[in-house]
Length: 426
Image (tube, rainbow, N blue to C red):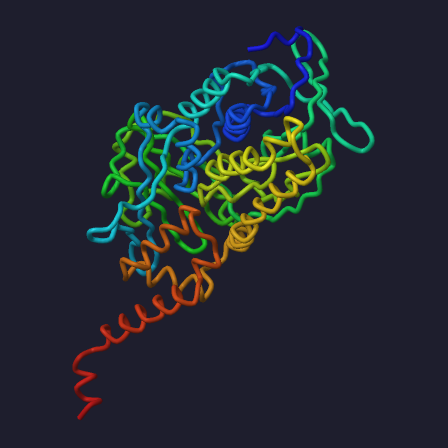
Protein backbone atom coordinates (compact mmCIF):
# COMPACT_ATOMS: atom_id res chain seq x y z
CA UNK A 1 0.00 0.00 0.00
CA UNK A 2 1.37 3.37 -1.01
CA UNK A 3 1.97 6.13 1.52
CA UNK A 4 -0.27 9.04 0.40
CA UNK A 5 2.60 11.46 1.09
CA UNK A 6 4.93 9.67 -1.29
CA UNK A 7 5.70 10.94 -4.77
CA UNK A 8 3.14 10.38 -7.53
CA UNK A 9 4.09 7.17 -9.32
CA UNK A 10 2.68 8.19 -12.69
CA UNK A 11 -0.21 5.77 -12.68
CA UNK A 12 -1.87 4.50 -15.85
CA UNK A 13 -5.33 4.34 -14.24
CA UNK A 14 -6.89 5.90 -11.16
CA UNK A 15 -9.99 4.13 -9.83
CA UNK A 16 -12.33 5.87 -7.40
CA UNK A 17 -14.06 3.29 -5.22
CA UNK A 18 -12.57 0.06 -3.83
CA UNK A 19 -15.74 -1.98 -3.58
CA UNK A 20 -16.68 -4.80 -6.00
CA UNK A 21 -16.38 -3.06 -9.35
CA UNK A 22 -13.35 -0.97 -8.43
CA UNK A 23 -11.38 -3.76 -6.77
CA UNK A 24 -12.14 -6.20 -9.58
CA UNK A 25 -11.12 -3.67 -12.23
CA UNK A 26 -7.89 -2.93 -10.35
CA UNK A 27 -6.94 -6.61 -10.14
CA UNK A 28 -7.76 -7.38 -13.77
CA UNK A 29 -6.01 -4.30 -15.10
CA UNK A 30 -2.89 -4.80 -12.99
CA UNK A 31 -2.58 -8.40 -14.17
CA UNK A 32 -2.44 -6.97 -17.69
CA UNK A 33 0.47 -4.70 -16.79
CA UNK A 34 -1.48 -1.55 -15.89
CA UNK A 35 -0.31 0.57 -12.93
CA UNK A 36 -3.37 1.32 -10.81
CA UNK A 37 -4.13 3.70 -7.97
CA UNK A 38 -7.23 2.33 -6.20
CA UNK A 39 -8.82 5.07 -4.09
CA UNK A 40 -11.31 4.39 -1.30
CA UNK A 41 -12.91 7.22 0.67
CA UNK A 42 -13.32 5.05 3.77
CA UNK A 43 -10.26 4.37 5.92
CA UNK A 44 -11.33 0.95 7.20
CA UNK A 45 -10.12 -1.92 4.97
CA UNK A 46 -12.99 -4.03 6.35
CA UNK A 47 -15.68 -1.54 5.23
CA UNK A 48 -18.55 -2.97 3.21
CA UNK A 49 -21.81 -2.01 1.54
CA UNK A 50 -24.76 -2.58 3.88
CA UNK A 51 -27.80 -2.05 1.67
CA UNK A 52 -27.49 -4.80 -0.94
CA UNK A 53 -29.15 -7.99 -2.15
CA UNK A 54 -25.93 -9.83 -1.19
CA UNK A 55 -26.22 -11.97 -4.31
CA UNK A 56 -23.93 -12.61 -7.27
CA UNK A 57 -25.85 -13.82 -10.31
CA UNK A 58 -24.39 -16.60 -12.45
CA UNK A 59 -23.13 -14.17 -15.10
CA UNK A 60 -20.51 -13.15 -12.52
CA UNK A 61 -19.05 -16.65 -12.12
CA UNK A 62 -16.49 -16.33 -14.96
CA UNK A 63 -15.25 -13.08 -13.41
CA UNK A 64 -15.00 -14.64 -9.94
CA UNK A 65 -13.09 -17.52 -11.53
CA UNK A 66 -10.67 -15.19 -13.33
CA UNK A 67 -10.14 -13.27 -10.09
CA UNK A 68 -9.35 -16.54 -8.32
CA UNK A 69 -12.06 -15.92 -5.71
CA UNK A 70 -14.14 -19.09 -6.12
CA UNK A 71 -12.16 -21.25 -3.64
CA UNK A 72 -12.11 -18.43 -1.08
CA UNK A 73 -15.86 -17.88 -1.41
CA UNK A 74 -16.56 -21.59 -1.02
CA UNK A 75 -14.31 -21.68 2.04
CA UNK A 76 -16.10 -18.63 3.48
CA UNK A 77 -19.41 -20.47 3.25
CA UNK A 78 -20.93 -18.61 0.31
CA UNK A 79 -24.12 -20.36 -0.82
CA UNK A 80 -24.61 -21.42 -4.42
CA UNK A 81 -27.68 -19.53 -5.50
CA UNK A 82 -30.28 -22.00 -6.58
CA UNK A 83 -33.70 -20.37 -6.49
CA UNK A 84 -37.43 -20.82 -6.83
CA UNK A 85 -39.98 -18.15 -7.72
CA UNK A 86 -43.59 -17.92 -6.57
CA UNK A 87 -46.14 -16.74 -9.11
CA UNK A 88 -49.94 -16.83 -9.26
CA UNK A 89 -49.55 -20.01 -11.37
CA UNK A 90 -47.48 -21.75 -8.72
CA UNK A 91 -43.75 -22.09 -8.08
CA UNK A 92 -41.14 -21.94 -10.81
CA UNK A 93 -38.37 -24.34 -9.83
CA UNK A 94 -35.53 -24.71 -12.31
CA UNK A 95 -33.86 -28.12 -12.20
CA UNK A 96 -31.02 -29.53 -14.26
CA UNK A 97 -32.18 -31.66 -17.18
CA UNK A 98 -31.89 -35.42 -16.56
CA UNK A 99 -28.41 -36.42 -17.63
CA UNK A 100 -27.58 -32.82 -18.45
CA UNK A 101 -25.13 -30.36 -16.91
CA UNK A 102 -25.87 -28.67 -13.61
CA UNK A 103 -27.53 -25.30 -13.77
CA UNK A 104 -25.16 -22.32 -13.84
CA UNK A 105 -24.72 -20.59 -10.51
CA UNK A 106 -22.76 -18.04 -8.59
CA UNK A 107 -23.14 -17.20 -4.89
CA UNK A 108 -25.15 -15.54 -2.19
CA UNK A 109 -22.63 -14.01 0.19
CA UNK A 110 -22.81 -11.11 2.61
CA UNK A 111 -20.98 -7.98 1.60
CA UNK A 112 -19.33 -8.01 5.04
CA UNK A 113 -17.56 -11.14 3.79
CA UNK A 114 -17.17 -10.29 0.11
CA UNK A 115 -16.00 -6.67 0.15
CA UNK A 116 -12.99 -7.08 2.49
CA UNK A 117 -12.03 -10.25 0.61
CA UNK A 118 -11.87 -8.68 -2.85
CA UNK A 119 -10.33 -5.45 -1.52
CA UNK A 120 -7.59 -7.44 0.20
CA UNK A 121 -6.91 -9.32 -3.04
CA UNK A 122 -6.61 -6.01 -4.85
CA UNK A 123 -4.16 -4.67 -2.26
CA UNK A 124 -2.03 -7.80 -2.66
CA UNK A 125 -1.95 -7.59 -6.46
CA UNK A 126 1.37 -6.30 -7.87
CA UNK A 127 0.74 -3.05 -9.70
CA UNK A 128 -2.14 -1.94 -7.46
CA UNK A 129 -1.72 0.73 -4.79
CA UNK A 130 -4.74 0.72 -2.47
CA UNK A 131 -5.13 4.23 -1.06
CA UNK A 132 -7.59 4.24 1.82
CA UNK A 133 -9.07 7.47 3.14
CA UNK A 134 -8.92 9.15 -0.28
CA UNK A 135 -12.06 11.11 -1.14
CA UNK A 136 -12.19 12.38 -4.72
CA UNK A 137 -12.98 16.10 -4.61
CA UNK A 138 -12.49 17.00 -8.27
CA UNK A 139 -10.98 16.06 -11.60
CA UNK A 140 -7.80 17.31 -13.25
CA UNK A 141 -8.58 18.35 -16.81
CA UNK A 142 -6.43 19.47 -19.73
CA UNK A 143 -7.68 20.41 -23.20
CA UNK A 144 -11.15 19.09 -22.49
CA UNK A 145 -9.89 15.74 -21.25
CA UNK A 146 -9.68 14.25 -17.75
CA UNK A 147 -6.08 13.46 -16.81
CA UNK A 148 -6.37 12.76 -13.09
CA UNK A 149 -8.18 13.43 -9.83
CA UNK A 150 -7.86 15.63 -6.78
CA UNK A 151 -8.39 13.79 -3.53
CA UNK A 152 -8.78 14.78 0.09
CA UNK A 153 -6.73 12.71 2.54
CA UNK A 154 -5.89 12.85 6.24
CA UNK A 155 -2.61 14.48 5.22
CA UNK A 156 -4.30 17.08 3.02
CA UNK A 157 -5.15 17.48 -0.64
CA UNK A 158 -3.44 15.34 -3.25
CA UNK A 159 -3.41 15.31 -7.04
CA UNK A 160 -3.02 11.98 -8.83
CA UNK A 161 -2.61 11.92 -12.60
CA UNK A 162 -3.27 9.04 -14.97
CA UNK A 163 -4.25 8.29 -18.56
CA UNK A 164 -7.69 7.14 -17.39
CA UNK A 165 -9.94 7.84 -14.42
CA UNK A 166 -12.46 5.11 -13.55
CA UNK A 167 -15.57 5.88 -11.54
CA UNK A 168 -16.44 2.84 -9.46
CA UNK A 169 -18.04 5.00 -6.79
CA UNK A 170 -21.66 3.91 -6.89
CA UNK A 171 -24.98 5.27 -8.06
CA UNK A 172 -24.21 8.76 -6.73
CA UNK A 173 -20.81 8.73 -8.46
CA UNK A 174 -18.72 11.83 -7.75
CA UNK A 175 -16.58 11.07 -10.80
CA UNK A 176 -19.65 11.08 -13.04
CA UNK A 177 -20.87 14.29 -11.45
CA UNK A 178 -17.55 16.11 -11.79
CA UNK A 179 -17.24 14.91 -15.41
CA UNK A 180 -20.82 16.02 -16.11
CA UNK A 181 -21.64 12.64 -17.64
CA UNK A 182 -25.26 12.68 -18.84
CA UNK A 183 -27.64 10.35 -17.03
CA UNK A 184 -31.18 9.09 -17.44
CA UNK A 185 -33.29 8.31 -14.39
CA UNK A 186 -36.32 6.03 -14.07
CA UNK A 187 -38.70 6.23 -11.15
CA UNK A 188 -39.00 3.17 -8.94
CA UNK A 189 -42.57 2.80 -7.69
CA UNK A 190 -41.54 0.30 -5.01
CA UNK A 191 -39.67 0.79 -1.75
CA UNK A 192 -37.50 -1.80 -0.05
CA UNK A 193 -36.67 -2.99 3.46
CA UNK A 194 -34.52 -5.93 4.51
CA UNK A 195 -33.17 -7.65 7.59
CA UNK A 196 -30.83 -10.56 8.34
CA UNK A 197 -31.99 -13.65 10.20
CA UNK A 198 -30.17 -16.64 11.62
CA UNK A 199 -31.61 -20.16 11.76
CA UNK A 200 -34.34 -19.43 9.22
CA UNK A 201 -35.19 -22.57 7.22
CA UNK A 202 -36.33 -22.13 3.62
CA UNK A 203 -38.21 -24.59 1.44
CA UNK A 204 -35.63 -26.79 -0.28
CA UNK A 205 -32.90 -24.84 1.49
CA UNK A 206 -32.66 -22.47 -1.48
CA UNK A 207 -33.47 -18.85 -2.28
CA UNK A 208 -37.12 -17.86 -2.63
CA UNK A 209 -38.61 -14.95 -4.56
CA UNK A 210 -42.26 -13.93 -4.49
CA UNK A 211 -43.92 -12.14 -7.42
CA UNK A 212 -47.09 -10.82 -5.81
CA UNK A 213 -48.06 -8.33 -8.53
CA UNK A 214 -47.19 -5.61 -7.81
CA UNK A 215 -45.46 -6.32 -4.49
CA UNK A 216 -42.26 -8.38 -4.29
CA UNK A 217 -40.26 -10.21 -1.64
CA UNK A 218 -37.27 -12.52 -1.43
CA UNK A 219 -35.30 -14.62 1.04
CA UNK A 220 -31.68 -15.44 0.15
CA UNK A 221 -29.60 -17.85 2.28
CA UNK A 222 -26.07 -16.52 2.79
CA UNK A 223 -22.80 -17.49 4.46
CA UNK A 224 -22.59 -18.31 8.18
CA UNK A 225 -26.19 -19.49 8.35
CA UNK A 226 -27.58 -16.00 7.76
CA UNK A 227 -30.60 -15.38 5.51
CA UNK A 228 -31.43 -12.00 3.99
CA UNK A 229 -35.18 -11.33 3.87
CA UNK A 230 -36.37 -8.35 1.83
CA UNK A 231 -39.78 -6.90 1.03
CA UNK A 232 -40.38 -4.56 -1.91
CA UNK A 233 -43.97 -3.29 -1.78
CA UNK A 234 -45.78 -0.78 -3.95
CA UNK A 235 -45.20 2.76 -2.65
CA UNK A 236 -48.94 2.99 -1.98
CA UNK A 237 -48.19 0.93 1.13
CA UNK A 238 -45.45 3.23 2.35
CA UNK A 239 -47.55 5.31 4.81
CA UNK A 240 -48.58 2.18 6.72
CA UNK A 241 -45.00 0.91 6.79
CA UNK A 242 -43.76 4.22 8.14
CA UNK A 243 -46.30 4.12 10.98
CA UNK A 244 -45.00 0.74 12.19
CA UNK A 245 -41.95 -0.45 10.26
CA UNK A 246 -41.23 -3.57 12.28
CA UNK A 247 -44.86 -4.66 12.53
CA UNK A 248 -45.50 -4.03 8.85
CA UNK A 249 -42.32 -5.83 7.77
CA UNK A 250 -43.05 -8.91 9.85
CA UNK A 251 -46.74 -9.01 8.85
CA UNK A 252 -45.77 -8.77 5.17
CA UNK A 253 -43.39 -11.73 5.46
CA UNK A 254 -45.81 -13.83 7.50
CA UNK A 255 -48.46 -13.41 4.78
CA UNK A 256 -46.23 -14.77 2.00
CA UNK A 257 -47.17 -18.12 0.41
CA UNK A 258 -45.05 -20.80 2.15
CA UNK A 259 -43.75 -17.99 4.35
CA UNK A 260 -40.37 -18.52 6.03
CA UNK A 261 -40.89 -18.94 9.81
CA UNK A 262 -39.35 -15.63 10.88
CA UNK A 263 -40.99 -15.73 14.33
CA UNK A 264 -38.90 -18.74 15.33
CA UNK A 265 -35.69 -17.33 13.81
CA UNK A 266 -33.23 -14.86 15.30
CA UNK A 267 -33.15 -11.42 13.69
CA UNK A 268 -29.53 -10.26 13.95
CA UNK A 269 -29.78 -6.83 12.28
CA UNK A 270 -32.06 -3.85 12.24
CA UNK A 271 -34.63 -3.51 9.48
CA UNK A 272 -33.02 -1.18 6.97
CA UNK A 273 -33.98 0.02 3.54
CA UNK A 274 -34.76 2.82 1.15
CA UNK A 275 -37.99 4.49 0.14
CA UNK A 276 -36.59 6.09 -3.00
CA UNK A 277 -34.28 4.08 -5.25
CA UNK A 278 -34.54 5.28 -8.86
CA UNK A 279 -32.81 3.42 -11.65
CA UNK A 280 -29.98 5.36 -13.35
CA UNK A 281 -28.32 4.84 -16.71
CA UNK A 282 -25.23 6.86 -17.59
CA UNK A 283 -23.08 6.95 -20.67
CA UNK A 284 -20.21 4.70 -19.48
CA UNK A 285 -17.40 6.76 -21.01
CA UNK A 286 -16.19 10.32 -21.56
CA UNK A 287 -12.76 11.64 -22.63
CA UNK A 288 -10.36 10.14 -20.09
CA UNK A 289 -13.26 8.65 -18.07
CA UNK A 290 -14.85 5.21 -17.70
CA UNK A 291 -17.68 4.20 -15.36
CA UNK A 292 -18.23 0.69 -13.98
CA UNK A 293 -20.79 -0.90 -11.68
CA UNK A 294 -23.57 1.28 -10.27
CA UNK A 295 -21.78 4.42 -11.46
CA UNK A 296 -22.68 3.42 -15.02
CA UNK A 297 -25.96 1.63 -14.43
CA UNK A 298 -28.07 1.26 -11.28
CA UNK A 299 -30.47 -1.66 -11.43
CA UNK A 300 -33.64 -2.30 -9.49
CA UNK A 301 -32.63 -4.13 -6.29
CA UNK A 302 -35.50 -6.60 -6.63
CA UNK A 303 -33.60 -8.46 -9.39
CA UNK A 304 -30.35 -8.83 -7.42
CA UNK A 305 -28.20 -8.18 -10.51
CA UNK A 306 -26.14 -5.18 -9.38
CA UNK A 307 -23.19 -7.14 -7.95
CA UNK A 308 -22.97 -9.36 -11.01
CA UNK A 309 -23.01 -6.39 -13.36
CA UNK A 310 -20.38 -4.64 -11.25
CA UNK A 311 -17.97 -7.54 -11.73
CA UNK A 312 -18.89 -8.03 -15.37
CA UNK A 313 -18.40 -4.38 -16.29
CA UNK A 314 -15.01 -4.40 -14.54
CA UNK A 315 -13.96 -7.36 -16.65
CA UNK A 316 -15.22 -5.75 -19.87
CA UNK A 317 -13.30 -2.57 -19.10
CA UNK A 318 -10.04 -4.40 -18.37
CA UNK A 319 -10.31 -6.44 -21.55
CA UNK A 320 -11.05 -3.36 -23.66
CA UNK A 321 -8.59 -0.78 -22.39
CA UNK A 322 -5.57 -2.50 -20.81
CA UNK A 323 -3.12 -2.10 -23.73
CA UNK A 324 -4.18 1.49 -24.41
CA UNK A 325 -3.97 2.34 -20.71
CA UNK A 326 -0.28 1.46 -20.79
CA UNK A 327 0.28 3.65 -23.85
CA UNK A 328 0.12 0.88 -26.46
CA UNK A 329 -3.00 1.81 -28.36
CA UNK A 330 -5.71 4.39 -28.90
CA UNK A 331 -7.45 4.95 -25.57
CA UNK A 332 -10.50 6.65 -27.08
CA UNK A 333 -11.01 3.72 -29.45
CA UNK A 334 -10.64 1.31 -26.52
CA UNK A 335 -13.19 3.25 -24.47
CA UNK A 336 -15.59 3.14 -27.42
CA UNK A 337 -15.21 -0.65 -27.51
CA UNK A 338 -16.03 -0.83 -23.79
CA UNK A 339 -19.08 1.38 -24.29
CA UNK A 340 -20.37 -0.84 -27.10
CA UNK A 341 -20.05 -3.93 -24.92
CA UNK A 342 -21.68 -2.21 -21.99
CA UNK A 343 -24.70 -1.35 -24.16
CA UNK A 344 -25.85 -4.96 -23.99
CA UNK A 345 -27.18 -4.16 -20.51
CA UNK A 346 -29.57 -1.51 -21.83
CA UNK A 347 -32.29 -3.97 -22.82
CA UNK A 348 -32.15 -5.55 -19.35
CA UNK A 349 -32.41 -2.08 -17.83
CA UNK A 350 -35.35 -1.17 -20.06
CA UNK A 351 -37.35 -4.18 -18.85
CA UNK A 352 -36.38 -3.51 -15.23
CA UNK A 353 -37.41 0.14 -15.50
CA UNK A 354 -40.77 -0.84 -16.96
CA UNK A 355 -41.41 -3.39 -14.20
CA UNK A 356 -40.32 -0.81 -11.59
CA UNK A 357 -43.61 0.97 -12.29
CA UNK A 358 -45.13 -1.55 -9.83
CA UNK A 359 -47.48 -2.93 -12.41
CA UNK A 360 -48.90 -6.45 -12.79
CA UNK A 361 -47.34 -8.81 -15.33
CA UNK A 362 -47.87 -7.82 -18.95
CA UNK A 363 -49.16 -10.39 -21.49
CA UNK A 364 -45.69 -11.61 -22.51
CA UNK A 365 -44.61 -11.99 -18.89
CA UNK A 366 -47.81 -13.89 -18.12
CA UNK A 367 -47.08 -16.22 -21.03
CA UNK A 368 -43.47 -16.97 -20.00
CA UNK A 369 -43.91 -17.11 -16.22
CA UNK A 370 -47.01 -19.31 -16.37
CA UNK A 371 -45.28 -21.72 -18.77
CA UNK A 372 -42.16 -21.77 -16.57
CA UNK A 373 -44.32 -22.88 -13.62
CA UNK A 374 -45.62 -25.78 -15.75
CA UNK A 375 -42.64 -26.92 -17.82
CA UNK A 376 -39.09 -27.82 -16.78
CA UNK A 377 -37.45 -26.63 -20.01
CA UNK A 378 -39.11 -23.21 -19.84
CA UNK A 379 -38.11 -22.99 -16.15
CA UNK A 380 -34.48 -23.62 -17.12
CA UNK A 381 -34.77 -20.99 -19.82
CA UNK A 382 -36.08 -18.49 -17.27
CA UNK A 383 -33.23 -19.41 -14.91
CA UNK A 384 -30.70 -18.46 -17.60
CA UNK A 385 -32.42 -15.12 -18.10
CA UNK A 386 -32.72 -14.42 -14.35
CA UNK A 387 -29.01 -15.27 -14.07
CA UNK A 388 -28.32 -12.67 -16.84
CA UNK A 389 -26.64 -15.29 -19.01
CA UNK A 390 -29.00 -14.45 -21.88
CA UNK A 391 -30.61 -11.17 -22.82
CA UNK A 392 -34.25 -10.27 -23.38
CA UNK A 393 -34.10 -11.04 -27.12
CA UNK A 394 -33.04 -14.64 -26.48
CA UNK A 395 -35.43 -14.96 -23.54
CA UNK A 396 -38.30 -13.91 -25.80
CA UNK A 397 -37.03 -15.59 -28.95
CA UNK A 398 -39.63 -17.03 -31.36
CA UNK A 399 -38.68 -20.56 -30.32
CA UNK A 400 -39.02 -19.77 -26.60
CA UNK A 401 -42.37 -18.03 -27.09
CA UNK A 402 -43.63 -20.91 -29.24
CA UNK A 403 -42.70 -23.47 -26.60
CA UNK A 404 -44.31 -21.42 -23.83
CA UNK A 405 -47.47 -21.07 -25.91
CA UNK A 406 -47.58 -24.82 -26.56
CA UNK A 407 -47.10 -25.56 -22.86
CA UNK A 408 -49.99 -23.30 -21.89
CA UNK A 409 -52.27 -24.69 -24.61
CA UNK A 410 -51.62 -28.24 -23.35
CA UNK A 411 -52.28 -27.07 -19.80
CA UNK A 412 -55.62 -25.51 -20.74
CA UNK A 413 -56.68 -28.63 -22.64
CA UNK A 414 -55.75 -30.85 -19.71
CA UNK A 415 -57.73 -28.62 -17.37
CA UNK A 416 -60.97 -29.00 -19.36
CA UNK A 417 -63.48 -31.24 -17.58
CA UNK A 418 -63.40 -34.73 -19.19
CA UNK A 419 -67.20 -34.95 -19.01
CA UNK A 420 -67.45 -31.73 -20.98
CA UNK A 421 -65.10 -33.15 -23.62
CA UNK A 422 -67.23 -36.31 -23.84
CA UNK A 423 -70.46 -34.29 -24.21
CA UNK A 424 -68.93 -32.07 -26.86
CA UNK A 425 -67.85 -35.06 -28.89
CA UNK A 426 -71.26 -36.86 -28.77
